[in-house]
Amino acid sequence: MQSRVRFHDQQTAEVAGSLHEELLAGLNATPKFTSPKFFYDRRGSELFDAICEQPEYYPTRTEESILRAAAAEIAEVVGRDATLIELGSGASRKIRLLLEALQPACYLGVDISRDFLLDSTRRLARDYPWLEVHAACADFSRPMAWPQGLSGERPVAFFPGSSIGNFTPEEAEAFLAGLHDLLPAGGGLLIGVDLIKEREILDAAYNDAAGVTAAFNLNLLERLRREFEAELEPASFRHRAFYNECDSRIEMHLVSLRDQAIRVAGESVEFEEGESLHTESSYKYSIDGFAELAGCAGFARRAHWTDRDGLFCIQYLES
Ligand code: AVI
Image (cartoon, rainbow, N blue to C red; front, side):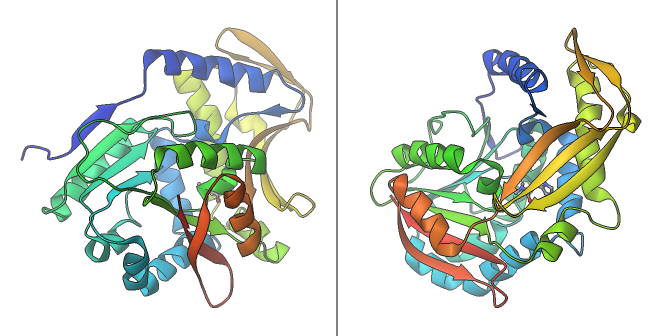
């Protein structure tokens, strides 16, 4: 069967080259860090999907339960016939909970993981034959423009999963301001936000007993070997994740088990035993704290929905 997905490749060679530079800049910084986007090759996206199934990882199932319960209300607030743009669309699973209620003019999935994006948007097009489906391979954390040829006149962005939490609050505000510029009046942003809660729940969510989050974190090193000519032994690092209450964020690290020098893209990077590579922060917000941040970026909160236990919330922000 011919694919009905219209593919827009926005991942230019220039961007691919600057990924090497970005990677090395973080590895040479003190303390060492990498952007969370380096997690998401095909294997990383699959492992992230598996994380979402872990009993300790509450965000996915909680957000899905909110979307399921509030779909009709969300549709009322968001309106029909929107050009629906999902940022970091991954498996395009959550959008399925809204499509029938929202009846968008078209759907665009944007993701950095090309093969994964193509598979999931093809499945979506097969399961929703009435829907015009587009896929854009792009790094949405960088300035982007919507591709040409999308039906509808009112763009509404969907950014679920609390991926906004993987930016620092300053980066999140800048990212939201950029998004605000791409969403004309009448458009909006439907966004999932993970909420501040007890440390035990948070620590468990990023240290699942099956070790899937650890495998996800360590896959970064495998990816460096596969794609960035790295010479290193993944087994010489261990996964560490903990809640940093002062900064309201989970931190994920890869801790070196010994003094060692690794090579990445032709450069040598030294680690001391116990030194860590900070691979991800996952910021948690209060409901109003997030609305305030979005307000600084030009958005006004129109509605929000949460679960009974106050673990997670979805906000609709108008442009
Ligand atoms: C994609 N993002 C919102 C996830 C999170 O919870 O910060 C990524 C993740 N990292 C470890 N587990 C899940």
